[in-house]
Length: 161
Length: 179
Image 1: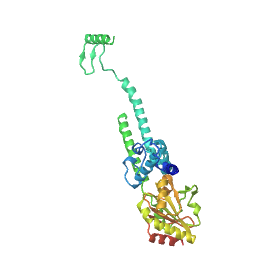
Image 2: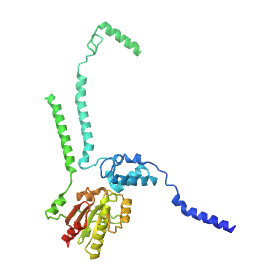
Image 3: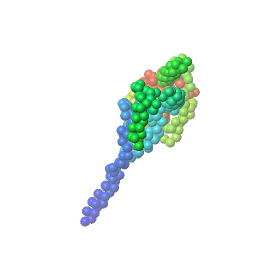
C-alpha cells in the first residue's frame, strides 16, 4: 500500500515537472501567410511572402516563434518593428524618395479634380443634340417628326405613370 | 494656346517622373566615401550613435570608446561569412583586451535579438555587440553588404575598412596603423 502511494506520488511529481514543458503552446491567433504579405524583407526590400534567402528566412523564423507564443498579427508587426525598425512594415518611407509614394497619388488626384473642374462646366454648356417635342434629330442624327416626338412623350408618360 | 496646354502638362509630368526615377537610382547607389577617404589617407571621423547593447540593458556608443582602438564589425546571424570570420574577431578582441589597447565592437545588422544572441553563444563571441535597429548607424558607414569591418584609432578616426569577410592579413595591416 505504502509502495503504491510512493509510486503515485512519484508519478504525480514527474507529471508536475514535465507538465509545463509538454504543455501545448498558446493557441495561434494568426498564421505566417497572413503576416508575410504585410511585412517587408528588410534586406531585399520586397514583400516577405516573395522574398528568398537566409535573411528573410530568419525573419520568417521569428514570425513563427511569435505566432507560437499566441501573439496577434498586430502584436507581431509591433515586435518586428522593435527588431528591424519601421522599414519592416509594408509601407513606404515617410522621408527621402519614399515620400513620392504618398505625393504622386495626391498630385495625380489633384490633377484629376482640376481637370474635372475645367471640363465638366464646358461639357454641361455644350448645346443639346437630342430630340425635342418640337421635332429635330435624335442622338443618331435620324429625323424625328413633331408627331412622333409627341407620341413618344405620351408613351413615356404612360410608362412612367 | 489651349491645345498646347495638355501636351505641355503631359511633358512636364513625364519629365518629373523621369527625374524622380533618376533621383531614386542615385539615392540608392553604394556609398564608398569612407573607402575613398581612407585610400587618400584622410582618415574620416567614425560616425557614432548610442545604441542598445545586445543581451544587456544599457547602451553604448563608439564615441564612448575614444582613447581605445575599436575594431567595428557589422554582422548578422544569417550571414555565413560572419560566422566564418567570428573566430578571428574573437581572437583579435582577446588580444586587444589583454594588451589594454582596445576592443572589437560588433553591430548587428537586420537581425533579431534572439537570433543574434544564439549566434553569439554558438560562436563563442565574448566581444560586446550593439543592436542597430533600422540600420541608422550602418547607413552612416555605407554598410549594405555584411560583414563589414572598420578599424578606428584612439582619436576616433577610421584608419582602415574592409567590406566582406576579413582575414588575419587585414587585421595585421589595420592594427599596424594604430600602434
